[in-house]
Amino acid sequence: MRRAAVHTSVQDWRSAEIDLSKLLSIQPQNALAYAERARVREKLSRIEDAIEDMDHAIEVEPNWNRFYFLRSRLFRLQKNSSESRSDYERGLKLEPSLWEDWVSRALAQLPRSPEKALSDLESAEKIAPDRLEVLQNLAHVHSEYFHDLDRSLSYMKRIVQIYPDNESSLADYCVLLARLGRIEEALEAMQELESGIPRSPPTQYQMACAHALISKVRPESKTIALRYLWRSITRGYGLDVLGQDPDLDPIRSAPLFDAIQSLVRFSKETTATAHQE
Image (cartoon, rainbow, N blue to C red):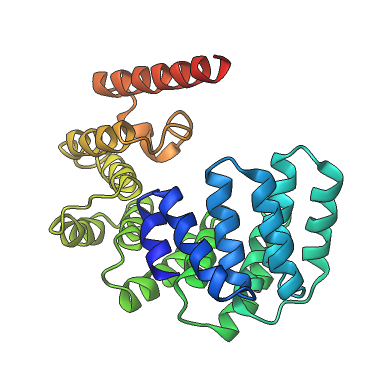
């Protein structure tokens, strides 16, 4: 599983599938390996094979609701709405026992029922109070659905204390501080992050957002924001949210921002043309 995870982290889906298949030949009752191979096969556009993997995973662990939500998504991609709805409803009805299933059910209820989602995440927190996925989602729900930035910040502080080397979480922390107008704290956190030269496109995008927000009081941050945004977009991250992300509003009037938007439009048009062919 670990070697397959390394392959998926660099989007080498074929190698990940090979490793997971080898594991399943040795451990045919490994439900997690079936689910992971299903995710990989989804990336390879082999939806039917992915659904078959989830059938096996559910046969082994019929009470893990996260498996029903995953298969529901696969059925939806197949445009099988009745099976997708059936699995989704089954996942909601199952009472979670593991923190992973509480998180899975919480996410499945967004954006329709943020109150129920928050309740499920709080149940997950009782079981696994220091798990990164639990804390990240609690911070996200408080920020994006309840607009409680202070509560969200309390979770982000816990995350950076427990996981000081987690690049993406530190970037999220910087953005949240910038949104709250705590500029000096945001700059201090960004200095720590930038000393390590953030490399992943999602982190670069978040750094662009943080510097864009800070540019409202520190105009020199606008150039830095655009630089990070360019790096992110040219590596394929942020194309779908660039046009509506309010964090980027302070830099939209910059000529380079227009150039970045033109690049995004060209990329989307090229992709659409390729699909038509």
